[in-house]
Length: 206
Image (cartoon, rainbow, N blue to C red; front, top):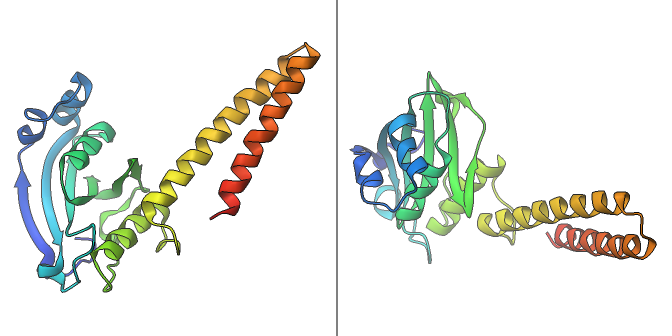
C-alpha cells in the first residue's frame, strides 16, 4: 500500500470493539465506529527492522492503517481517538468505492484530498525515523516534503495559530465597523493592528 516496501507489509485486521469498548469516548464518537467504519486493518509497519532506516530520537515506528468506510462520512473524531491511543505515529488510509484519502494527527486531524486509491504513494527518508515521519506527514498534510527548520507538528501549530488570529481579527473588524462610539472604535482599531502585527510576525518567521 502507498508504494511502500513489501518488507513493511503487515495486513492485520484490528477489531473495532478494541477501540470503542475500551477507550473513553463520547457517545457520538462511539457510534461513529459502528455506523461509519466497516473495518480497520494495519497494512504497513515502517520501522528500522522493516526498512533499514535508523531509529529516531522520538519516532520508532509509523503504522499505516486502512480504514474502510461504510459511506461518505469521514469519522474524524474516531480516527483522532485511534491516533491518540496509539504510542506510534499513524497514517490513515480511508477507503471507499476505489477512492482513498490520507489523514494524520498533528494536534488535530489533517485530511488530504480524495484520489484514486491506486494513485496514492508516500516517500520515506533514509536518514532516520524522525525524518521519515516528518516526510510522510508533510506529504499528507501539505502535499510537499516538509519545510527546513520546522517540523510538521510545528508547522501545523503555526498554521492553526494564524487561523485563530485571523478569525479573531475578523470578529474585531466587524465589531469596529458597527461601533458608533468614537473611543471604543479607536480601541478596536488598535486591537486590529495588534492582531495584524502578530499574524505578520508569525508568517515572516517561517
